[in-house]
Length: 42
Image 1 (cartoon, rainbow, N blue to C red):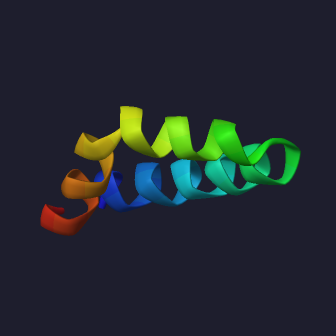
Image 2 (image 1 turned 45 degrees about the horizontal axis):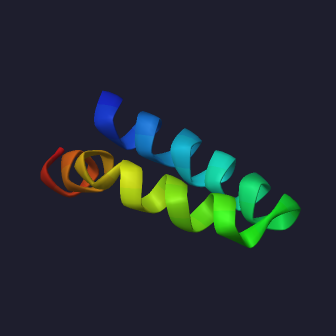
């Protein structure tokens, strides 16, 4: 449950970063691969 909530918040933050600068979104996604796995396993 907690992993899903964190993943949702992170996704929203990533969208905000993308709207400001696409490169920030790409870097954020590459730096946080563990968060996506945690959401899938959670």
